[in-house]
Image (cartoon, rainbow, N blue to C red; front, side, top):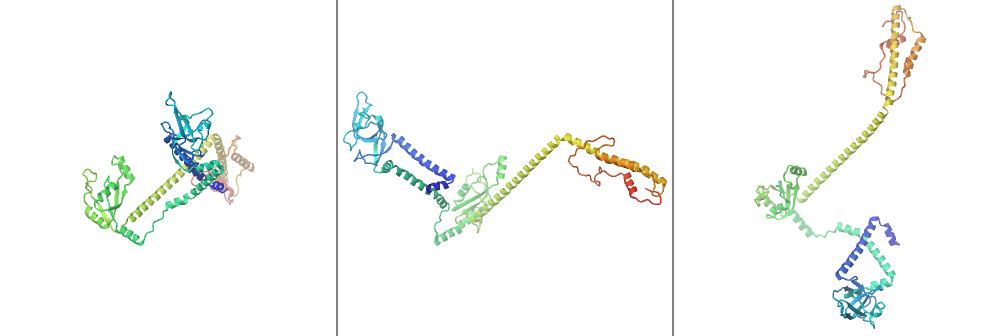
Amino acid sequence: MEFLSDIGRMNKRQVLLQTISLGMIITSALMIWKSLVLGTGSESPVVVVLSGSMEPGFYRGDILFLYQPKQPVETGDIIVFNTDGREIPIVHRVIKVHQRAANTSHVDILTKGDNNWGDDRSLYPKGQLWLNPNHIMGKVVGFLPHIGRVTIIMNDYPMFKYALIAVLAVFEQHGSDGEQPQAQERQAPKLPDLSARKLKKLKEKYDRRGIVYISRIPPHLKPQKLRQLLEQYAEIGRVYLAPEDPALRKKRKEKGGNSGKNFTEGWVEFEDKAQAKQVVAMLNGQQMGGRRRSAYYYDLWCMKYLPKFKWDHLTEEVNYQKAVREQRLAAEISAAKRERDFYLSRVDKAKAVSAMLERKRKRGGEGQEGEAGEGGAAQGPAAAEAAAEGQGRPRKAAKQRQGGGGGGDAQPPKQQRQQQGDAGGAADGQAPGGVKVLRTYGQRRPKADPVTDAAAPTLSKGLLQLIAGKNGKGGGGGGAD
């Protein structure tokens, strides 16, 4: 049950790995078996002795190796044969070979067990007295004693077979559980213990090294060639050349120049700083030389020894530049993503606005009718203002003629109510002539600013004078403008 619970706790990947491992084991066994079949020419190259009929030559549990010879068998050979109707082959010795005169290729064979009293004719099918070459599975060429007893035990006791399979599965499970710690051990190997003497020796060797800086690397000069040129003067350790800018290389290739990879500057580590100083003093400013046909034959060495500079300083600088480059790239990618998101949002907004305009265009007829109704309503107050201005002028002239206090011809109240009713009817959407105007209410328009907008509605001068005349108090004389 514990084994089944372990299988239940396994995830899909572990189950897949276990299945693949089992499949590889089975496939390997089949490949080995088929290779033996092809190599020996026998359909069963390995068999196990199950009985004691060949004692004392072979005992139960011995493993036999078979080979199918091209030559016919002879008397005394031990063969494995199988007749029609039998499931298990038999291993016995050949005691007689009979060759027919009429057909030299046909051979009759008679076998017998070393521990049996008689021949094997009682084991042959009824009516068969001899074996034919097609009954022979192979000739015994070697054996291993008692190794095949496990096979006999599994055939005699099937429960032992199932128990063995379960044990193998448990071992396989424990082996898979131990793979992760082993992998961690491989990833972090244990460093060997160093004594104080070895540490001191390593430190002295590290301090003895010197770094030479090369400010210019000629075109076509590679690190391997640079090492070859400098190794003839002193022992060289590590070499690092800084590659050129990829943009410059691309531009040079577009213009038809050198398409290879060039380097701009380099650092060379010498095992002995004294030798590094001597090499710099000897080669700096001198011609590189080499073969005359080389691309850098006429170039000059531009070298400088860097005191108190170690290879760790260079690796730190290279790692720092790499980190800066990665951060810059990440920032550029983030900015590009923000621009893409902004562009997509604007596209979605433009689509929404286009859809709104399309819906407005479909309702264009209704919108035009609404505009006509609004125009009629706007004309109502203007007509009322014009009527009031026309009525105010005669009343003003009468007041000037009379010159009396607080008097004058006033408009009858009935006429005023009629004018107010006409103005109200015009405002409600009905023209003074009695024609009804259909008004539809659309989107509310913003009011015009009377200060900045010249088209904003304003009160006429006559209406303002009329309002001023009604609110003003009458004096001893006539009113004046």
